[in-house]
Length: 115
Length: 115
DNA sequence: CAGTTAATTAACTTAATAGTTAAATATTAC
DNA sequence: GTAATATTTAACTATTAAGTTAATTAACTG
Image (cartoon, rainbow over all chains, first blue to last red; front, side, top):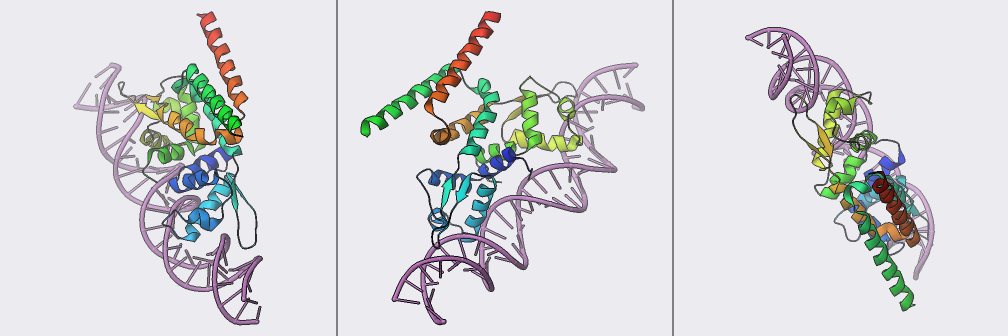
């Protein structure tokens, strides 16, 4: 695998199990057992996937008793988003961007209304 | 490699040579020789990279005499952008999105002024 | 300290990647 | 039809990836 960080990140994302793990971490920290629960795969396999995600800097780990909780680090995704910028004009009209922004504002508004 | 399209796309992007090829295609169609020119790599190696990009549907090819020109297909990048949506809130404040939209509007305006 | 739970490491297998060189194919140009 | 150019395919090598089972480490629990 190429040593550059963008390649590491894309490589880490090129596997459905790893993407599912990331998605699972959007709701907060999880232990390895919790993360492995949805998959028909042994724990060592999950450990390896976590190593790939960690190498790509997409997750960070801590220690809590026997547990090694993981949490999401979104930074590398931001870099992908920035890399994508040079291609946006090829697949996206500028007004779609506004649409999206307005949708986000509405979501924010609802969140604020709720609290 | 996993069979799903998103995995194929991420895999194709996980190599600096392939990303450089894509970037090169943003300025228009190129032949294989033209694409291989910047790289210290044999033609068959480039052919293989093109096959990976083609499998990911990131490029399309035609025939022009001996040449097999390639052009960019941005569709899979759009899918990545959509996939990314679930993570944007983790790395991006909503006003960044507005900033970007306004920048795009300015660019469009300039383009229109020029023509 | 003995036992249990959580997670990792080691050793191994199988398949896929990324590159090479040499040969083959397709098209044009004379 | 022969030669030249552009590109691909074949055959091979070395490395990495993704999974397994079995053994090990780390920390808690009684």
